[in-house]
Image 1 (tube, rainbow, N blue to C red):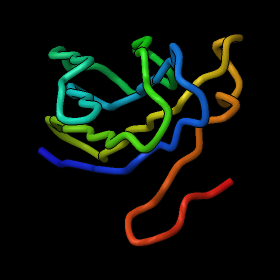
Image 2 (spheres, rainbow, N blue to C red):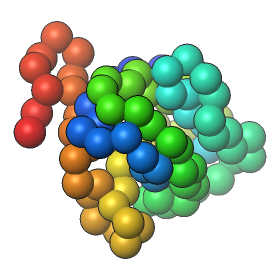
Image 3 (cartoon, rainbow, N blue to C red):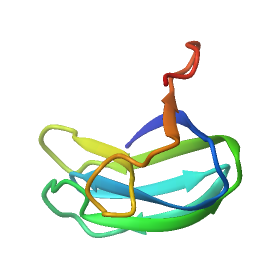
Length: 102
């Protein structure tokens, strides 16, 4: 089992979609509340699971808990735009101990 934490900065309040691709099971929490979980073991696939969230303007903590049965670890979390493919406009990643990117 492994954990990863980062933050996203949201410029405008509204519904934003987070997508997750993970090798095996995972749980995604935003601001300390579990929002998405896949309990089954499966091969990695980009954007295999998605959740639409109503996010306020400002910084939000995103935490992923990954359960790995065997083999290499792999996961990805993205904030998607309205087309469901491109990056979400107005949502930026803020890495720990670094200023927000623009």
